[in-house]
Amino acid sequence: MSQPAQVIARPNVRVVLFGLMIAMMLAMLDNMIVSTALPRIVLEFGQAGHFTWVFTAYVLGTTVSTPIWGKLGDLYGRKAVFLISVVIFLIGSALCGMSGSSLFGGVDNGMLELIAFRAVQGLGAGGLMVGVMAIIGDLVPPRERGRYQGMIAGIMAIAMVAGPLVGGFITDHLSWRWAFYVNLPLGGAALLVLATTMRLPKYRTEHKIDWLGAALLSVGITAIVLVTTWGGKEYDWVSPQILGLSALGVAALVAFGFVERRAAEPILPLKLFANRNFALISVIGFLLGFGMFGAMSFLPLYQQTVQGASATNSGLLLLPLMFGMLVVSLVVGRTITKTGRYRIFPIVGGVVMTVGMGLLTRLDLGTSKTESSLYMIVLGVGMGFLMQTSMLIAQNSVEQKDLGAASGAATFFRSIGGSFGVSLAGAIFAARLASSPAGAAFGGSRGGEGGAMDLDKLKQLTGPMREAVLGTLSDAISHVFFWAVFFVVAVPVLAWFIKEVPLRSTNDGPPAGASPDDAAEAALGKAPVA
Image (cartoon, rainbow, N blue to C red; front, side, top):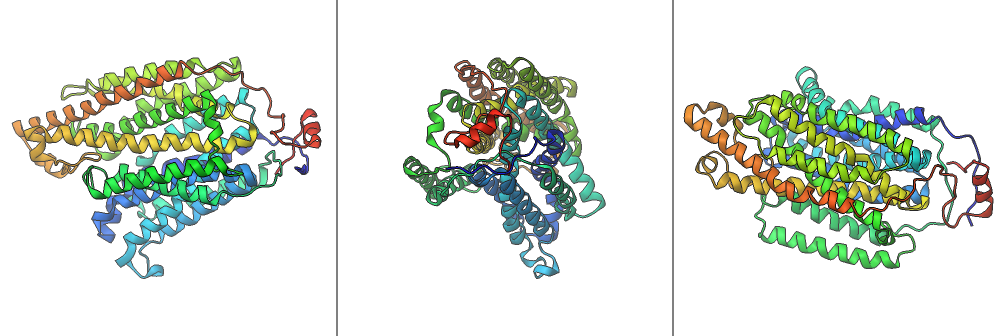
């Protein structure tokens, strides 16, 4: 039987939202800033062959921990769990900044230390991303939630553009270590605001952690992320390493499914997928991540090679995409709050995103920056219709007691979609590049974001050879977007089958299994708080 806690008034949502926005900004900015600082890190530590692990460790930590953080918030209360994730992220940031310092024995093991500490940082970041969405779900009823989640989507868009700019400034004027230290004052401010102002509804229930399920899910996700990270880059797709990891991932996830069916408190309740809306929006989230991160990987490559932009300026050239996503996310959020209607938005978003991806297939040597900007605006508008609408539908499809698990699952599928999108796009790009004599001579047969290309060598080329290589590059990049169309076109088709379940105008209804006392408090418009 649940025991109601102290009852107090609803918190100032806007004050709490300020702290949540800082936390989300930290999680989204980090990889963008670090990518700009990485050349300086490699210059200091050496071991360039391991530099991709700086990103892989972070992605692994984030993706593996996301569903687990969501479930822990359901079991133990979201405030404490979220604050712990912030602390872990800040500890990881501080340790990353101290990597290779005299405190840890010098630069000899600096790269390995940085990789290990990035994994710690990623574990915390997983809790930040799912925690923000779940906390908004606790504070704000579904009918009003779109407006606030639209603001979070705006923060994500700003972070994607600001990251390279901030990273470039820090690297040029301070030290690469401040790419990590900058998180400390911002994270400390978020921690202070949230610890002192956030009061969340909580129902204290008996709980038991599904450790076996968590372990199997972690093994399965780790194997999948490594397959998408290494496949076609470190190892051939049919190599024993990739095939073995694939088999391990499938086996672990199948075993996870059996364990979850019998667990008293499953990490990812499989019953959620019996809900049509939740199942559909999970697949849509995967496809959204697939298209979004694939595009975000290759648009800067096109801008830096074919259009001749610098790394910093290529971030600025993404502003049209982010502007479209930001404006539409805010408008859609407010419209949902006003009308209570949401089904039309993922349908329209899927159609517009498909059109935008189709327009990007037209990129070539003669495409002006104005023309490519217009294409990116269309793609960004499509993403704006989908970004937080998908999270809102996932949360509205479950009971309040499963809100954290649902938020974690939605974030997880988008992240996994992004991993697959970048990997498959890299393989398509590399194959197309290698099929051309100019591309084979300049690049390599292996993929990734740009394969084995030497951008310094590109700058040295002149005349017809340069034109031939740039033509091959633009063709390979447009080919990536051509294949992406076949994936994102499924989004509006799937969205058509979403059922418009009315959005609740209150979160006062207690979760299933709550006591009569809790129900009485809910009827009075009050809720137990953590």
